[in-house]
Image (cartoon, rainbow, N blue to C red; front, side, top):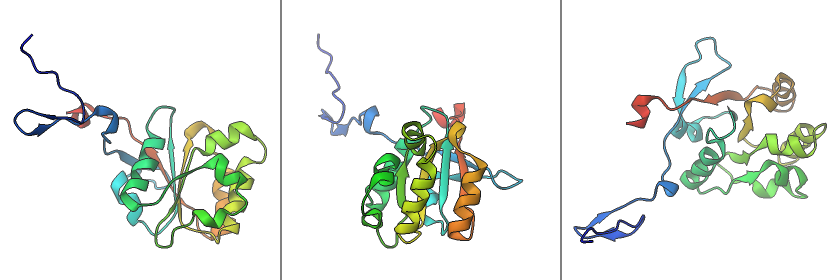
Length: 171
């Protein structure tokens, strides 16, 4: 056939570039849960906040993609919660001036139900209480987590939930 095949990520005749859907990141709206107004912020604003953030969402909502995008935007490599929990040197993951990006607290909880949260909190304390962005499935997040973080940091983190895409977002 005379039709040109479009290969993702490859220049096509006419100088246009086709971007692969697998590499595209779609900006997300986040609902702030710890405020009565439950206002929204954009994911791109998370890096500019001066407090730590917990990102909640259901399976497949894009929590890991969001953490990865924050890493690309800030030049900071994210760390999985299980790896951070077991690290002998948690401070090595801290980049001055940037939040520590921790992905998948729920995965650590699945591996070590009783102690995962306490171990991650102890690692944060050992690392000097850095500002962080941490992702977790909504179902695994507990209010006691906020109390424990407030004990260590003196203030609760901002808790946000990833919003579903709307029809308008899809366009």
